[in-house]
Amino acid sequence: MTQDQRRAPDRGTSSSTRLPSRQGRIAEDERAELRREALRRFMKRNGLSPASLSRAIGIARPNTIYNFLRGNSRSLSLSVLERIVEAFPNAPRDGLLGHCSEAATSPAAAEPPAGYRWVQISAIAQAGVWRDSAEKADSSDGILMPDDVAPSALSLIGVRVKAPCAELVFPAGSILVCTVVPRQKDASVPDDSIVVIARTNDTGRTEVTVREVSTDEGETWLWPLSTSPHHQQPLPAPWQTTATASAGDGRIAILGVVVAAWQARPPPNF
Image 1 (cartoon, rainbow, N blue to C red):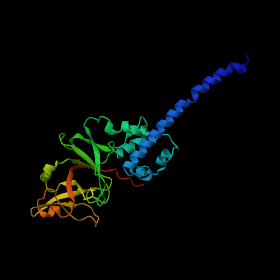
Image 2: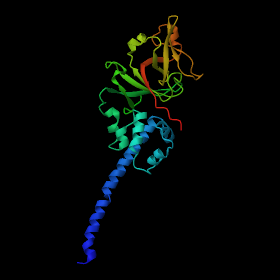
Image 3: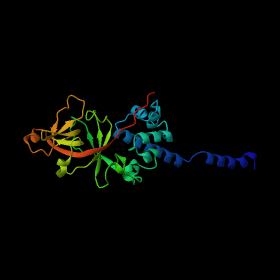
Image 4: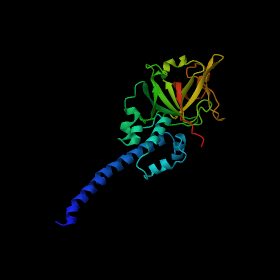
């Protein structure tokens, strides 16, 4: 046996342990694509671009996010993931890690950690925008909130705010956590409460906005909280029995009373 023949097995063994198998490379590519798809869905739900996401988590340049989405890198660093989860509690951390599909690893599909409850985002509040339905079908979109945000017996919903809507109190992008008010108890909503209302027109389309409850001379009104001059008209409370309550304002219902609000961490000054 020649010297080259004797060394050939050693070279083959060394090569097989040093290079990943084809199956291993395919599996890692699939996990990388799962991570990208989870990030794309998260960014779409939150109205984020790579640049705005980078600013929100304190990254000076968006190249890290761009390169990942374009396939130039297989994953985001752990420090970047931690920044995303800190700034956006509804971020699908496991999905971003590529462990499995986002649907299976979203917070909605998992048991909330002790002391927290999952609040699903059920509607988007935006003045002047009439949608086919006030409800959002994406059950994975929501936020973890502490148990003590409201008594456990009360049902909670989340509402995402877009401008124009309630700029006097809540900036665009805020998530409002609301206790659900049964229709027969609408009249029990006290003055100065901030409520999310749904107004439905004759075509069945719905506008969701945020208002403040105020009573004046025996009549209760829902006052706008927007800075837009186009959205300053108060609406009668839905429990009013006077003619004012049916003055062409559409069917009005209170979706919930705001008990907490969350907003993304403001970007740092570079």
